[in-house]
Length: 299
Image 1 (tube, one colour):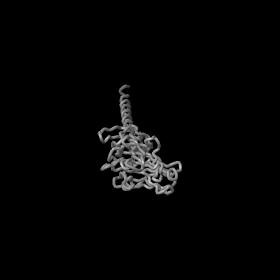
Image 2: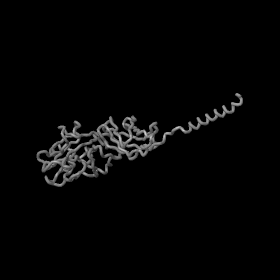
Image 3: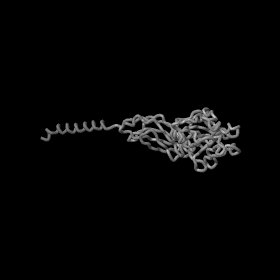
Image 4: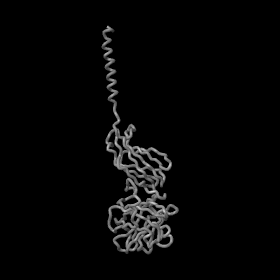
């Protein structure tokens, strides 16, 4: 009887072996994921704000988020950070004025990286929203006899200081002032001190400004190139607006440049120009790159 049952036993063992092989070939795989696109950035205080167009693979069950390599280009040291699904991430605990190369991949839940990655070079920059008296940074127009003022965006103590728009102090360290033709003009101008009868330093502005309510809101792939800092005056209309305005600029100090961004803030009157009569003013938030010749990003 045992001999007659042997072929059946061999067939059973063979069937189990084939089934096991089939099961191994049908094990779940880890589908590829695509990288995010249109990577862009802006400078924050000791941080870099990143924005991107999300990966088209975010709907996959195995989509695990994003992997970032943050390379300090001064020391050649890097750190790895992980970001969840979404359209951006803020890399914190960085050093102002240091250039970083940030590379972004999408990853699966098992940790497999997307075949493609995208990178960007950027530098954090100091932010200031108050003046030396811990008040809002208000720069009054040239029509004001009481508050007529200019501003040193980053003085020797690292403070954004409102100073008189006259005298040696203005000539030595005024970075910009606000001009109004008269108390009822339908515009005001942010101007380089060099335009005030050549009294001060040269400040140049980027030829394009951007609508925004905060400095965080405008991100870009590169900083403006040197050739685009072609203006010494930015015109601000006396009209209702839906948002504030971001203006890029750079200050010439000898042969060096110091780069900055201004947010011209929208007031409770829904205008950029605030106040009344002779005492109208503009109110700023400032992002200032205190390292000489260091733009916000490589260009």
